[in-house]
Image 1 (tube, rainbow, N blue to C red):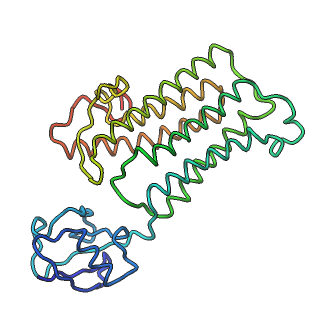
Image 2 (image 1 turned 90 degrees about the vertical axis):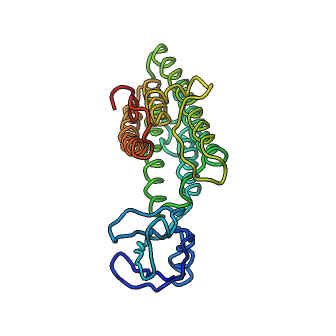
Image 3 (image 1 turned 120 degrees about the horizontal axis):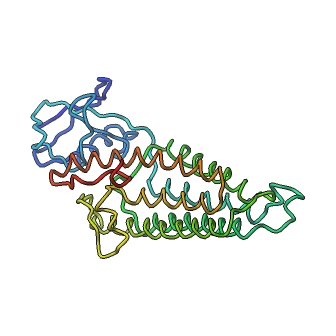
Length: 299
């Protein structure tokens, strides 16, 4: 049978042949043969112009499509691989922060001759450790549910991470920087290290939920790793630990710029967490009702 492909603005693309067993992923490939600019990752197929995007695994039979039915395609614009974006946005902060730390004379001039405080040095190590971890997680841990994202996200994300890195590093590495008391420093450092280990533990647990080469989704639950017990209270403990890391970094450095970075990160991650929490509850009828999104018992 044949189905008609039109854009969400009602522009005709053409007709393609399908069977009851054809999947949306097969239809996307057929569309790309008609219009090469619309490669599969750039397409969002829908039953209605403003409808929900269909999954690649959805089948023609299950969607109720018959001969002469219409499918609407939305052009998502130029795409770029998730891993490429993550590598760029996480590798950048490594180099940007170290410019202020390793070559302070380039930024502060003659005033940079004095030795940095121990807190400023440890802060540079912590920042570098965090983003080195993120790069390695991108390479060896994360399994992405989508192959690509809009290419403009690359510029938006890099501007956010690189810009905040320069903002934080400028003040913490500054010759006039005044470190906090020893007790505050060690408390903040301990919080940072604890939350970094927790964040890594959650990422590994989430990775093991999805078999290689699949897009299987399951309810995340604690493993034998005690850091994963936070799954009992929130849907996105990786974000909880991430925010905790930057709160620890802020306490450790007593830096206003680091505090702004922690707040901005929390705001964005709270939005993501609420969205994922909502999707979990919608997708799984037996999803634990006592869980919150990102802050136990609160949010």
